[in-house]
Length: 362
Image 1 (spheres, rainbow, N blue to C red):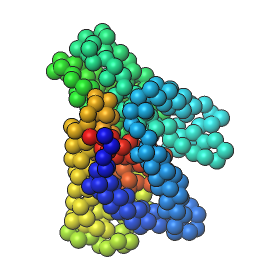
Image 2 (image 1 turned 90 degrees about the horizontal axis):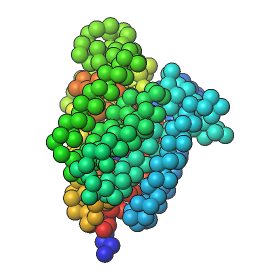
Image 3 (image 1 turned 30 degrees about the horizontal axis):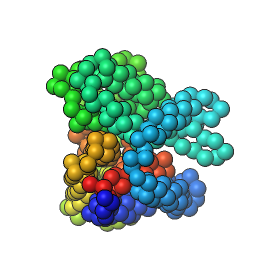
Image 4 (image 1 turned 45 degrees about the horizontal axis):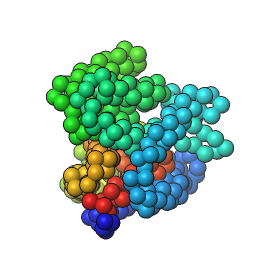
């Protein structure tokens, strides 16, 4: 029987989104002025192509019964894989900062790895539900699980986008754990993850710089440790109440990616410790309500999808925040509902639409 959605979750999402737009409006001023001559260009772009389109897809995801996604799980994943392959086609790929993570067709730019996050959650939930009886069999379920993750992860890793690879891997592991993984299977996943990390550092030795700067932020302060030092300076400058909205100093060409990866540092500088804690609190509420929806879901597919979406959003949020305050290495992933990025915003709102849809049937 259909009930009302989780209004606490919906309200928290709306508050976080509005707060994110306020943070973006301030953080994007310098970049907008430099790139377009106007101070609102990036904000307007995000409002139209991120929030506007995202609300449409989120509303559709909210209205269509989530069980109808089960038979569409494989086609959605295949479409996602197709777009990930297109990233490596020179005619349609778009490169930035040495990474090929976008496709550009007729002026429309999209980041396929963002779609892959949601597509993989839906597919993995349907796949694991269908294998409930053979779940404990390593050859029937566990080995194919690793192969599926490796195929998707490999396409993301070679872009390279190791931050997104980490979020996809962690989300997949969380879904597999909730599905009923044994201690031995989870141990094998951890060992595989460590081996993958070692291999990627071997392939991309420059990625080791982020770990070096994480372990010792005083090492090469004008080079590999520059961003983390500027982020910590921004966070520390905020004090208890912040310097005031719109009054950040670090966003003016001092802090790299102020409206993207580093937007939490700008927000902390302007809103202070209390503002940062309030934002973190919003994500904790989202985590609690999302897991509550998963626990109360009446079927396995809904439960696994809810867990996957919740863990995806929260792990991405806290990896981003952790990297800005020196608790984790820099990863380059956006802060959900806050950072600039149309692809991320659209898929994030679609994911929340699915989660709210599941809440109607708990």
